[in-house]
Length: 317
Image (tube, rainbow, N blue to C red):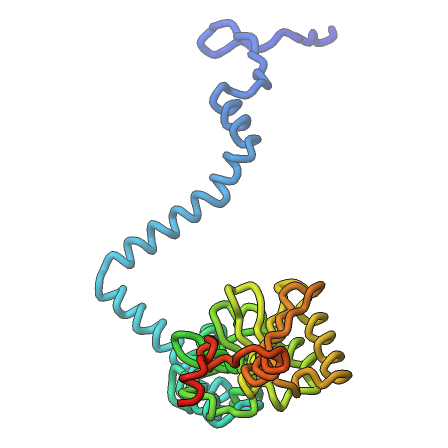
């Protein structure tokens, strides 16, 4: 007789029936879902990856630096390290080289150095030193740099004196652009420079130089240029002669006067003033001798130095 195979599941020892197996739900839990959604946020990821480590480092450093002795020791260590680096031989400036400066300017330039040489290049603030040097009126530009070998090089371009400017506060030397170069006590200090005078004359130095160039034929006789009303010039000559120039076209008017003088020797005569303020109607003011000569030729009495007619009694006396 064949064995009968029982395919029924075995019974539990306690005799209870076997419970059916519950399948696992693949969906995440609510907490896990929220955490995953937060992780997908860029700001949250930055906070976790960067913010939290930085916060821990700052907190740790703050706790460590809260002790005054630790702070003092750290500061001393940093300062000592900086001093050690800045004192290295390759950073030492041992001499200063000045080119293009007069002895007076060179002396002033060396006196402006913030430290005594030799010194570390870190102790010399080149931009600040340049601003300080540019306050010297005599310097137009300067190139400051530290060259290999510990040399502080200063290449200076000084302003070239072109004019003397006399005003109510004194006499100053100006360059061609009207910038102050220096002050002088009298014109005799620089007799080689032409003189301009009057308020506002320093603002039109370019025109003054053009007028002096136009007055070339009589330049040895020129005493200077006087600014009138801050709008026009008078050219002052020796022998108390004066050429009054217009406010506009002064150079052209003076060139015309020079041509007339070359042809007629106008300024070699007894002429006190050549009035060219109206170029279309030039006026000559004669001297006293010339006026009296004309008056005598016309049978008129002579004039005195004050411009009044000399009476016969006074003339005889």
